[in-house]
Image (cartoon, rainbow, N blue to C red):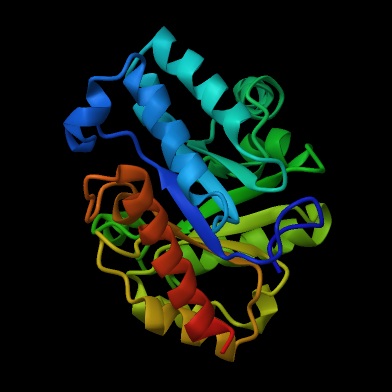
Length: 267
């Protein structure tokens, strides 16, 4: 199931916290500290269904010092037992990564992080050394630009993304706290996610606004007995079909998606 015993075992739903001010309802914008208020409303409205919250750091960083203050408060607002993912996509030389890891795991207190593997093993090792944390490594992303590098064919005829996946599996045999980010839009490449990766945590973006096929993804995972995964939805939960009662609308968006996940994967 998802992660270890300190996290919920009853939900594969990850609620993505993407702060897009233009999409936040005007009634919310009238509130004092409206961004902090909105995120806390989202957390409060969806925590009964969420196995994780994924905080996209870019949206907070764009707000400067105030954004970091809001992020610190939002993280503390998450109920215990629900995973807090720092969507930072970090990756740098090891001396720099040590401080990125300290920021993510010690200062902010995230349970997990997203990482970019382009600079290799030593750039990620400072994150791996936090034994009780989870590291989701970009393997094949859901965006159109994934073809520019991640799908490039190597001399052995396989893509760069499959080489990354193989590396992650070998690293996880040592560290046992690794996962992957694998986009729901990459249907043809799902064949590489077989039972040999059952010890990896899988974070799956791309459902909803990006057009990923939930039925295909969940049926594939079910067929291959891959249980440790999170289906992320951001805009589809936070900003879709908002009625006058915004909290109720967001709650219903989360409920519907979790129900769909359960019906397809569990039933």
